[in-house]
Image (cartoon, rainbow, N blue to C red):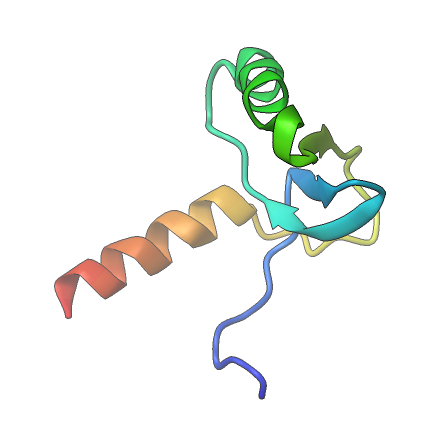
Amino acid sequence: MSSWRETLPGDAILFQGDHAEGPLLMPPTHQESFVEEFNRTYRSINLSITVRKPDPNDDSTDAKSTLQIQQAQSSQQ
């Protein structure tokens, strides 16, 4: 089943072992320390985050701005 929501490019990828589970949007600040803390905390259950390099084929829309707009719209409903 597909979602009505547009897929956003992620800033990072969530892995379980060697398998990519899905994209993540990173916090706007302290990204490096967030990744370090997440990986240290969840390593025991085989989860990790890898920050991805921007793909030149990504939509030019800023994913963080789009997410903030979607969150604002859903909170108004």
